[in-house]
Figure (cartoon, rainbow, N blue to C red):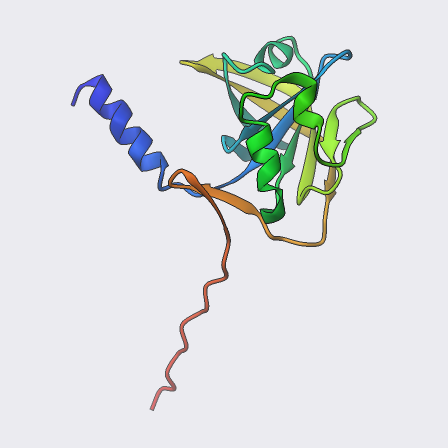
Length: 172
């Protein structure tokens, strides 16, 4: 299989990987930056950390590359409009035009009514292909009591539905 075929097959496989939708935010001290992302994952519990993968062409990449801290805001099903806002043609401060955005003590913007906002101190990075993987050591977590995540799968937004456990027939 050639590289073009592998790339096409990989993209098709990834359409089947359901992921929570997040907005990654950061600041350079003068401007705030935000982008929608699903390439986020937990890394370790000791120390508590996560990783984000950011395309080198993203507007916030240069700020993160300079060592800025960041926040991963996990969106709820009612916040799909914020994901669209942070992934479309609107750039810079315009991405903060909607939503209850606040600043953490370290200056990183976070979404006050997100499912959870995970504020991270950048603790490492490495480039790979078109992206950079940034490691964040978790410094603060704010979360809501509700768990209604916005999920992206097969090119569309959806939400989680609990699966009913199959009933076990009584042994007889």
